[in-house]
Image 1 (cartoon, rainbow, N blue to C red):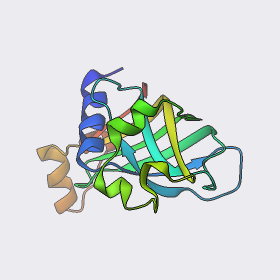
Image 2 (cartoon, one colour):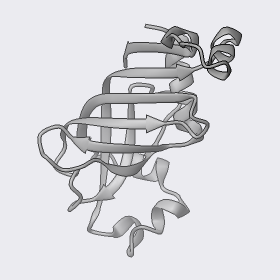
Image 3 (cartoon, rainbow, N blue to C red):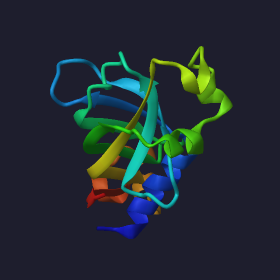
Length: 154
């Protein structure tokens, strides 16, 4: 596993913490969610949602990510579990989170999910001079000339 790829993914998620996520066990489409990252926990992140949301039942899940600058793309697999630790709510509670819940932290619909990450496929875009030249001169570009593609354990 490449530590640099893992670091690049985590930094890109920190810069733009928006994913599309869905459960593997149903036919429902993925939906956008905002992740809460802990810099000391690089194998999990948290999602505030509601108890009636389609991901609230938990289980094996898949998330897709595209960085703000379109330099990092990832498909992340793992397991969604209900997070019952009130310290997690305290740690990640913010005005943007609060705006989704009419009764704030005491809202009975509040549900926090922990996404325990298993692995990911990550594509990083770092075209070299040769790749850029081929792009602009209508020549065949090889994938490795545009960046890296790695499967990493999380």
